[in-house]
Length: 113
Length: 114
Image (cartoon, rainbow over all chains, first blue to last red; front, top):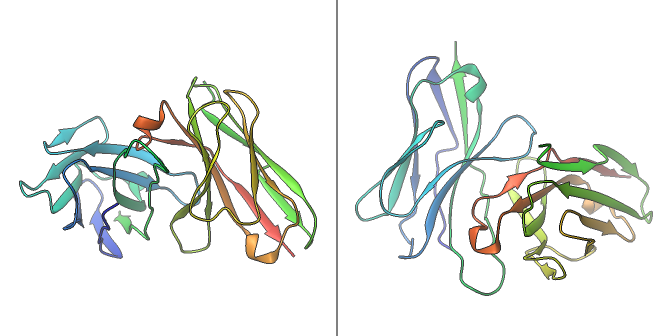
């Protein structure tokens, strides 16, 4: 699976949009981009995923560049409860072997009052 | 729905002791996973079960065994605990192995081995 690069930490003012970047320059054609977050020491929570097109759900939007080498997770109106570590993961189902989600160190997002 | 549940929430063991971590899901998912997370690190896959009756090794399987008891339950056993196994253990499930990117996680078991 392709590796990802994320900033170690970011701050965002409460009520503003939080834009979390991720680089995945070695992504292959069948690999999806997944975003998870982990609040404090809880289990990771799925946020959103996409292949080529931009995606939006009730939690966030995912913008994937045309060359698919980077993406941005957007939390449109960040709240204090969005303070968490955000993980960008690229992965695909190969049809055999382990379907492994490789969690790096992620981005620690701090939402400031 | 409770989602994914794990027991116990906390456990302290002495070196050499054994224990089993329990995981259950009520979402009728086919695939289940066990991860460990060391302080300040991301999660690493220990074992997974793509479907009932099958189990396979992940990235860090040494020192662990698993049992897929039925479709709902997937247990992780430490036969002889070592301090290096001090970690937080997360169980997860996905609808199918092909949907394995979309996983639902339990709250974790915090294990300390002295």
